[in-house]
Length: 510
Image (cartoon, rainbow, N blue to C red; front, side, top):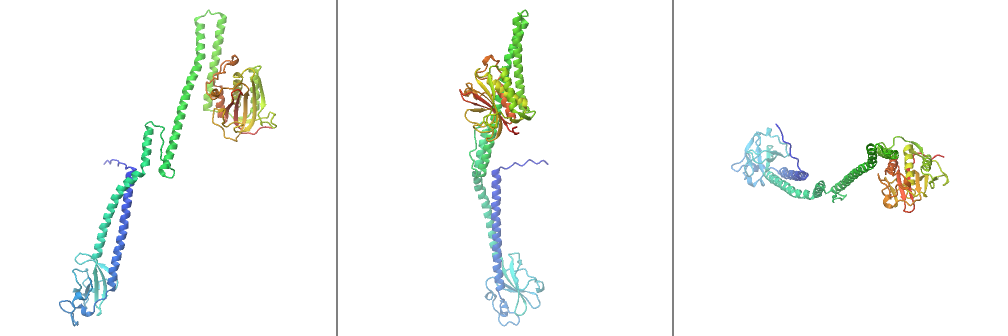
């Protein structure tokens, strides 16, 4: 037999049902306890009357239609017993007499002989009615002549009261369940209203209104804390989506820029190659010029591809090899290479303010990293300074160690731009600065210098071959891969200072 899955109930329905069941159970339990207490109290009252009753004198044993032996005068039974008492007798032979004292009909179901009575003298007990009516409360006693006497009181009033109270309790329970169902439904609906608002907000967000937030954020309530968590989750989701969109836009722009940069030398190579093919009798000078331009554009395209490959490699495996690197030696090698590449330039090596032992002498500064990549960063910074400044501008390379801060570098401040997030303040760092006293980039250009394929307005001076626009981007990526930062401090007219900061993993040498 196949069973259909039961339809799940809503939270509101479950809460109302649970509240109604608990309230009804509480009412019924309390009414049952009250009923038991009242029945026990009424029974105790009857027992008190029974135990306090004393059988009448022997003269009262005479029935209304005659008299017992040895009894001189009959007395009517209704004048002897109070209220609804009934008295039953066992004769001298232990047999139950058919007559009794008291008014009313019916009586308890008593055994025919006293030996089977089974009642302790003075201890009340409950016996059923002989005709199936209400039960009786009875107590056994011994008459003045030694015969057994049973005094009985009916429990009809007790059973009637308890029956009425029982029906009253059931009615109260039904009314309570109905009231709790109606009022509880309204109360639960009112209590769940913040959740309903969250549900509607979530539906609107899934419908495209991504800027919405939940308004119920009181931390003192469960729904408020849920709203705070929901808003936090929404913020993280939005931030992730924004990062994803920004990453996709950067990737599309990067692909477009890369395609554009590769198209230019490729077009030149194709054009000159077609020229050589279509004009085989081209003069030797023109042919040689075409070959030179083809080689130059091929070299430019090769450098561009190498830079793109390096960026991809840095993103996949940032630092393949780490070792203790002497930044002072790398800076000295970079200065020597820059002097050879740009003769006539004033390029010098100097200590960082406070970096040497006496503030003026050069000192060894060691960091942990890849020597080849760090040398490439210094070379890119020096090439950038020599190409993008006037011929008479001085370029200075400074090496030292500092604690990060607004004045020493590593943290953000006005006029300082970094490709990555700022470092914590007060962290020990090794520093290589490449500073020039040229005019400095404009504020708009300073914000974009680390972007890929960006070329400043001063690019191409001194007849140099225009770069790919990836040098500073590669340098920033290498710095980030080493756990450091590459930043630019500049003011228009005051030159530019590119600063490479690396965590100081090892101490400086003597």
